[in-house]
Image: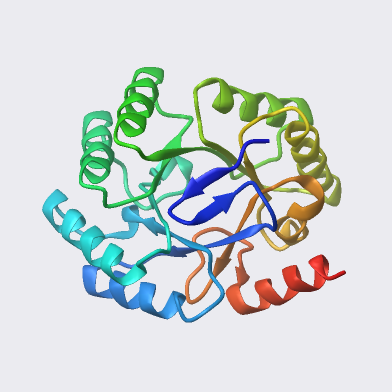
Length: 250
């Protein structure tokens, strides 16, 4: 598996990394949230732009600039999660493209979350543009009502790799303990054959085990929370770090 470098952070090499989302509705809240998150053991931050209320492109760019000033060498993952993928807002294909492309051009984010459910033309254009700008691409897929079969999970991750993702991410909802094990086993199998880092999680309380098992399954990143979780089952940051330290102790 090839590791991915975001600023000084190597993803896909060494221990499982911790990402914490910013789910703020205003620029001021976003900056305050970043400052609070940085007080804990976080490796990088995801900015959920879809949580921003009534924000123009100029406001988003200005907020991103403020966040970069606060974060310093902590990488920033920019994410606009659509409603169909569990997000707070919808956005058209051209606006989605322009938002990401502009942030990348101005070096206001280190990586971008690109939904696999977007039309193929949007995905291809964005991957090409973001890579041209020196940004990394995290392809993502979400299943909020079920856990697909192991073969579907693996094929989804491999599709992301084939479309030149730098990191492949999938989140599923378990209905039984067997679903959690299926996600973990699929992650392990995929990590043995894929070259890009994998991020996987089984959501909700039932799936919490999958969020701390990356050392075994090959999931390179886990998502924690500080004040507000961006997905069901995220574990509080400081406790998450304690658990990961315990699991990785010799």
